[in-house]
Image 1 (cartoon, rainbow, N blue to C red):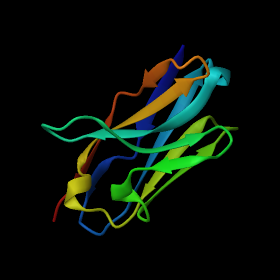
Image 2 (image 1 turned 30 degrees about the vertical axis):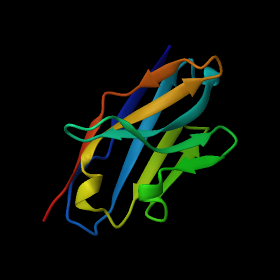
Image 3 (image 1 turned 90 degrees about the vertical axis):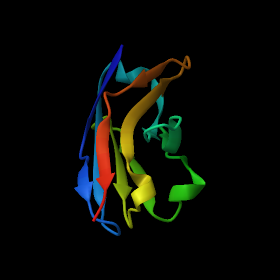
Length: 116
């Protein structure tokens, strides 16, 4: 089992920045990919960014150039640096981890609000 705990959400003005963190615990040796999804009211959950244990990254087109995902394997923590935030980025952000056996784990979610 893997537990994921997110932190760092909050309220920010358009153009501002936030940094999300997600710490994994449990059977972390089984984790291959970690990342972030988001879900806005009335919309489906969507991938924001992901990173493999080797450092390969993947981003949604809507956040390329503004968001940066990074991972500290020693701390079993993944980060999402979000810059130049837009109102459309407002959502609940969920940390995600996928094991080598393709089992999915989810955090409880953290709210990001972008508003002036």
